[in-house]
Each structure stands twice: as C-alpha cells, then as structure tokens.
View 1 (tube, rainbow, N blue to C red):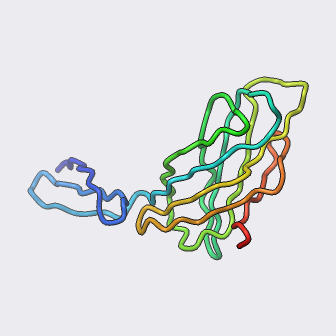
View 2: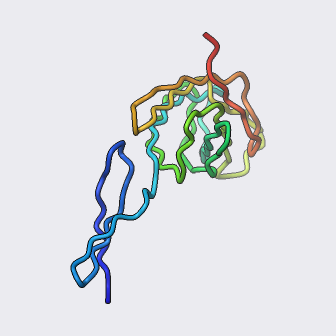
Length: 149
C-alpha cells in the first residue's frame, strides 16, 4: 500500500497535508506550519555588509526555533519583508530574538540590529509592532520587545 501526499491550504494559511492512500482513503494530517509576515528595518553602520539574519518568536509558553530570514547584503535603513513558516503557533508573541552573522571576516566589527518590526500573524492577520533599542555585535542576540504606546 502506498500513499500520495496532496498539499492544500486550510483556514488561516496553515498548510495541511492530505494523504490519499492507494485504496482510496483520504486522511488529513496535522498542520505543518504557521505563517507570519515579518517586515523589519535594519539599523547599523552606514556601509553594507554581506551576512545572514536569523529570528525566533517567543510567547508566554512557547518559542519557535531560530529561522534564517535573509542571506545577502545587510544594508542599514533598508526594510526587509519575509514570510516565515513557524513550526508551532505562538499564540501571543511577546518577544522576538534577532541575530546576525558575517559571510566573511570583517575587522571593523560592525553592530547591527532591528530598529522596528511588524509581525503579521497569518491565521487572523493580527499585526504586532516591535521596537529595537540597541545594535549587537556578530552572533549576539538582540531582544526586540513590543513598542511602548
């Protein structure tokens, strides 16, 4: 007996996998991911730097693993927009952690960070704004908290 996976999109942009068995039965499995739209503005020195950006979402009870958001030239002042497919649903995101890494050895030791970020949850389109307060050195973690009203 073999199976053929069929990907469909259920409510809230959560991917569901429907498996069609060779005998004709259809079985829907649990969601494989939860979608978030991340729109963030990078802060740092005036020169661009080749590197990676990583991010993880944290809530009251759960945290996602760290996801790679971008590979390329890190340009301060540029707004990056990425779709993130998280492995679990962080119901209320209370903190975002940001980390960056160089492609190459760079003796100037630049510091980058998130100045502002919008996080839109896919299942209900709720938008939460986060504001960064500092820039961090390479491989250091920046904690980005919700903006104060």
